[in-house]
Picture 1: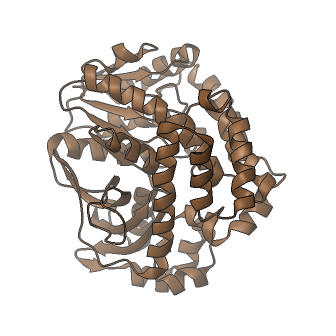
Picture 2: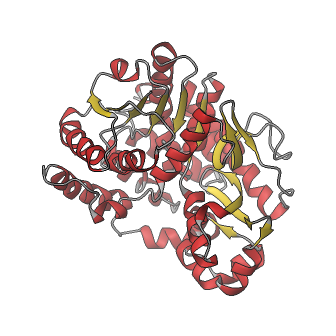
Length: 419
């Protein structure tokens, strides 16, 4: 079986390769193909990834190519993890909104919309090629941000796709450590939209242990998400780190102004990582890779793909159609929830209703994401403006107007219709 990784030139790809080499015991992966237009990067990452496979004794073949069609041909699964415009575009996403006093971030707000506008057309082109060239019934697993918007665009276009994020698996691992149990023993009630999620329960043997965690480890849970312990106590759940952009928006803007962006830090890490990967003696993951981001991505990806191909029915946090699961959203919205996964796809795990303290924000961002998909697929200044006006972190005409101007100016090289 062949698995294709679009965006295989990412410096984070070795984490995914290492995961397949270590964990894909029940998957007969005969070929893992890395695809990327950046040939020089592939020429470094490809040989290193091959050494990782050999180090773990995996019998599969590791290949790489700049030819998208060749790489997609006969693939049973297509993992999409690309970044249009590289770190330079990310740095732009993280800076231009600050001029309007809005958060600069690559997955939400104006920066997230800018990334969606650049990314969706490229991913849809990849998916259309995969539909022609990949193996019959091939799955597209989207790890490309903003995952919810990209996944919705894929599903709207009729593709067999599911979105994946590593936020939930990170919480699962953290909760398991605090509870003294194996990670697989913890099942989360993970609910919301991509990068707008809350952990409402942590079940072990059918018993919700989250109240116990909140009572005994409140500071340890609040610290990593950088929110006040009192907020978690009031909500009775654990928000993801990305909720800080909403719950502490102005504080984040103050921190970001004048400080190096995450993109700048990652770009520096990438330079160092590529130097390390070029060392023919390196056969394991360097410690620096763990600081690159995407913790437990490989475990999440391998687990999800295993369920899609073997039908083991395991529970994963994925992005999928709402289909009535959250009754306050349209059926065609894309949500991120705990779901049971088999060969036919993912089915949300039944969960208690979502209260108004969460549902209002979810509904507002879901409406923005619907408009964002329209703007990304069809283009047009007015569609960009409408999406920004609807976003809870923008919302004012003055800001939406200025951010539209800034977004289009910053992305003129990537958006032909905006020139």
